[in-house]
Image (tube, rainbow, N blue to C red; front, top):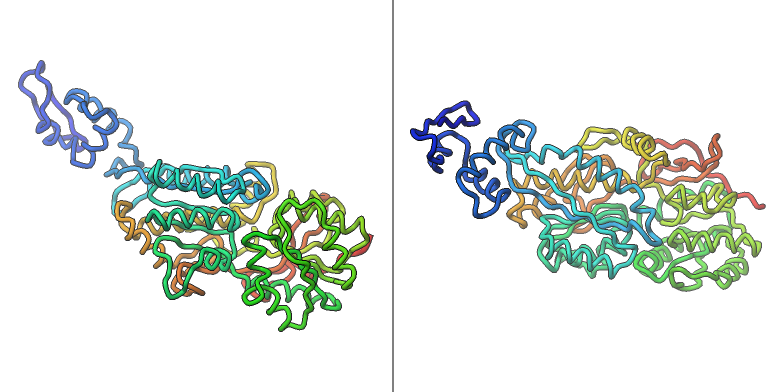
Length: 466
């Protein structure tokens, strides 16, 4: 019989009734060590040489699982955790679309040093619950043995996942949580950086600057009612040393702080009463979306209508603003990503506008801000793995993340620039929700002082009574 190898080499075997030997397969160029291990892994540990020959032929016909039929490495396992259900589900609303795009971009494997590594993405839902986030992260790390774990969607998801990764010595990339509640909320020390976990997003200093820039565009009495929940974000925003209170006081604002409330509160009468008594003309805070809907509707019912409402987290998503009905007109929020951001993906070369347009075309839904950041996490993962030279040395992967300087779809990321070890910052601007020509709410960038490279399309308008 004759064996034909992948390079058109032929090896004759004298007796066709005799199975080819391992040496025959090696001489034919049908096997090398990596391919032998992969094929025996596919066929089972006790594979016969004839079975191995069949596997070799099938593998040749399929191109070896890569676009060019070149060398193939072991499968890279990426774990991904986000809040796909629960009160924070808006942060995971676009996950299915984004992950499909990443899988398509990596369908031929991730090219590292001339070898194509298949990529498997294992997805878990934190259910908007920190305990659940920690549990599924542990399952991915110790059960599925992921090489790298990614997480997004407020500190309620990012922090427990990062803590599990740090404890188990697995590299992690997280985003969509201000860096202070991520870093200091995990008891981070700038003098003793985390070894395995890295994060990118903006910080409280950025959103304070954005909000105060917005508030300067409308005449007010500078009295600010604060709606800060008893969670990682709320405690960071309301921190008397590092949060909003000292910065707003220095800027000439008076803060009315009724104290922390529990998430999923159904009665905000006490907070509304205090804001009304102080004649607060500005409201700010970082409630979960359903809580702000409850608060804002009760405020209207009780005759409290400030000139400005600049709210983080709750007003990020079109669905959350639509839930307010007519009361959503002219509420404002921070803006981390839009189709008009002048950046493109290092993974697919798609612009921000292309990615947003593709999402709307595929789903029939308006774009949402997390789209860019979830995509960017996979950009960083792919780039770091390439520079690490593979996945078997986890320390090399972590070091590569730490050394990342990459232009992404959310802007340039540079971990060497700080503000603390383990954190890279992204730009932030201010936006306002307004009814568009079709009747749906649209997020308009109305202040870009903090990031002039991102175009603004208007100025802040006051909320009108009624």
